[in-house]
Image (cartoon, rainbow, N blue to C red; front, top):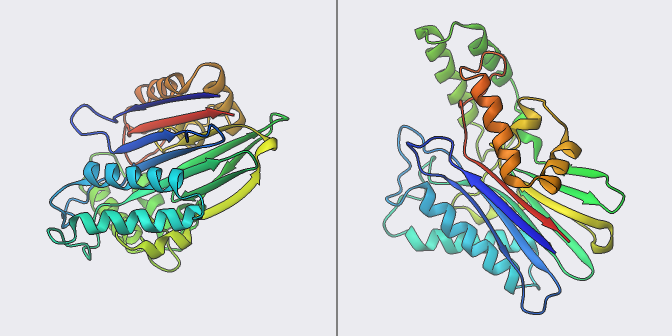
Length: 281
């Protein structure tokens, strides 16, 4: 079995809010991969005294431990319990009802001798390569299907001159429209303080014998495919397996550097935290 990971902050002035970790039970019959992407703190605050990196580390650690040790629980149940456990750790000091309380996207994969389970919540991606070489991207695409006026507002932002007051105002309006749909019916969901959100995750199970490799990618790493269109999901998996997660992230960074203002490839941030985890079974 090969396990490899790489992570890099989007900028030197901010902490890396991603998380990646693996667990291999002593039995040697299976394992767990967990990849999280912390949601960038809102300018209006989060109501939390600890911050997003603290939350992501706590949630990721709890999810990893539960997924590895509680095989009688589904991944949804593990995520719900991890959210609840993390919430209890700071409920007395922090306002967990705050709309922007720290939160994260989630990818989890768990395997044993018979099956491979997966869970995806929000816009991080799990790649599953089968023994024939076919690659399937497991995605939660609700962010791509937000109702109007989100799409119209986004296009209005892109049509305005960069650096202009008009563009800044339009971007703020678009941001408010997106945030109104966070953890709301008809919108999209991230792991925050409510364990019930685990029911919104995309989950599934495939036979262990059919899987060759798994990869978890935060949206900073998926940019090579879904922003810059330099390859497809099979191509991304090929880079991961042949050259490793570090190479995938370096290719993303080269594309970002070649388009620093987002003129050719519009995106919310010039450069984002990027994390990739790979397991060859």
